[in-house]
Length: 151
Image 1: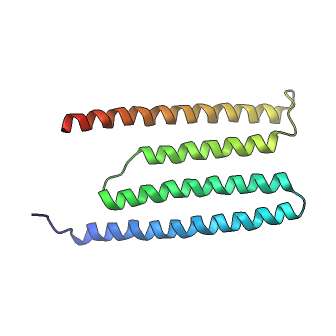
Image 2 (image 1 turned 30 degrees about the vertical axis):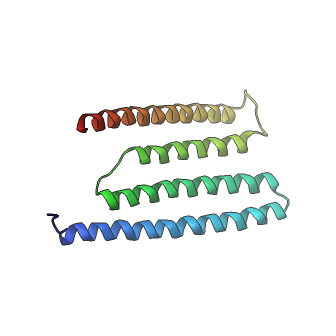
Image 3 (image 1 turned 60 degrees about the vertical axis):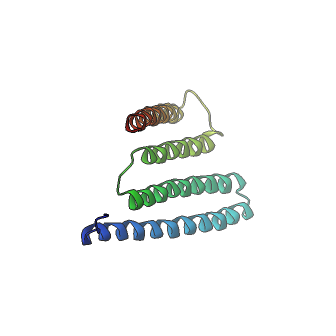
């Protein structure tokens, strides 16, 4: 016999559901605004700036989509999973790497201290992506091992 959820469990479920709907609206608004703003920039003759802005906003929307997925899973299973948050971290790092690369492509001077700082940030972001991907792989292997033991 299944136990009825108490008021706190139902409240928690509705909070996750409400947060999920707000995130969906935010992501949709973000994408719409990104298209309009990028089209405006391109129309003004700033093609590269418009494309970089669009790329930045689309990747931010992808981060929101992964958070929406995670919130939905939490609402459904009542368990917090770590790997979706790591995926958000990877998307965030890749987003930053792409934006830095696009913004710095025109002034690549190895003697410039600002460019050296950009290279250091890119290296650090690459390490973060690698470590997060490695952690996801380890978690996946552990989860596979746990499911094998349950069977």
